[in-house]
Image (cartoon, rainbow, N blue to C red; front, side):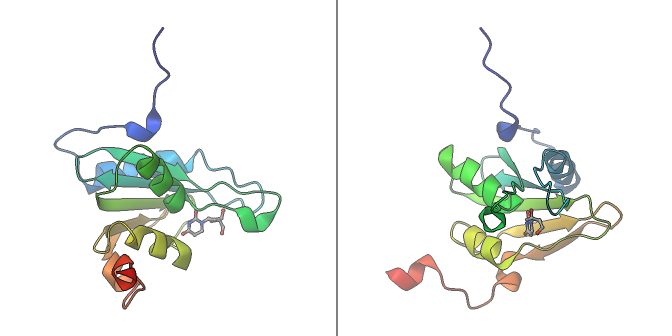
Length: 145
Ligand code: THU
């Protein structure tokens, strides 16, 4: 019997680029479970070896338990044995891009303090920033050594 397709381990290929990564993030956003906010967010986290791990926001009737798309992608990646990342694409069905929340910035920084962060809304151009700009002077693993 064939194993089920593992969509969080899509491997777009060597000529993969930012637009491709963002397309994967937009597709991931369609899987969002967000009956409360109605906001769909998708993330595509590019590992050093080219593997892409996707995530989407998963809300809960106990609102505070909501998991953001970015953290869901990181958890999938780390649980798959990956800890080295190059970039993340974050897509939303909202017209304008959403920047990662503070908790997600900290969560990403744990593994990739210089991660490239690409964001795009349904009607906005792709924008790129570096995580080091989004969370300057961060509390980091080195502070515990
Ligand atoms: N959300 C994310 O998935 N990522 C962020 O960085 C910001 C917010 C989600 C959580 C919630 O389901 C919805 O967006 C509204 O806050």
